[in-house]
Image (cartoon, rainbow over all chains, first blue to last red; front, side, top):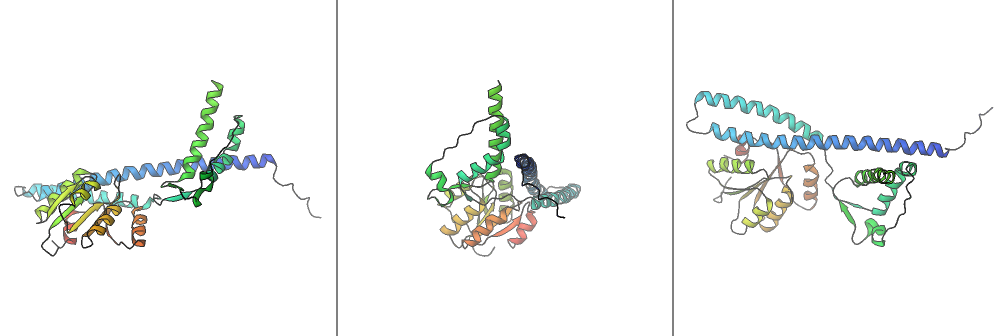
Length: 172
Length: 121
């Protein structure tokens, strides 16, 4: 005999799903931030390497540079090349999305609110939404909104932090 | 680099890199000028016509790709060499290629000896 059909996801299940989504999003933000930090650090290291490589090249080309100094400078140059390979590999691994994207602000805000619905409800925050016509026309608008970074991450973080801030303000 | 025009513009927001690279190029017989901002290079182009533009890609205000396109539009014969350490640069180059601009990209840090070899010195 077939087992009875399980009832479709209850509200609790939906809440759990949202909570899991929120947690995944938070993890994604953390990883993205770590990636950006590494990228920025490696970029800075790379710049110092480029400057040092040029300075060593210039020092080595100085007419009164002794044979021993040339040897030391060659070794320093070789060490820098090795370091350069490490930074190049790290930077090649990280790929920042620099493409400019058209986005629909209303869709973006709605999805962020939906995602953080649980958090907002728990904190008993009453959210009222209002959008202008130009924003709701979104990407097809004659004046669409352009972003160079990931807008989902930005609005998601903003919504979450706003909910926390509002709750703090209310309880104060 | 063949031809009589030996003027080279070196652009990098890291001033030490731009300055030292310009000194190295000058010692190799070029007339290199260093700029720490793309806008300064654009302003200087009004009085000088460089045979070559060497530029970093990731710079505040304007990318090296945007600068290169600006130079190519004003002076199509100007050669361009871009350098960058970031993989994201590939997206910018791809966009430029779609617009009909193809630029050489060198990986940063570039060893001066390799750069001079590339320039035929």
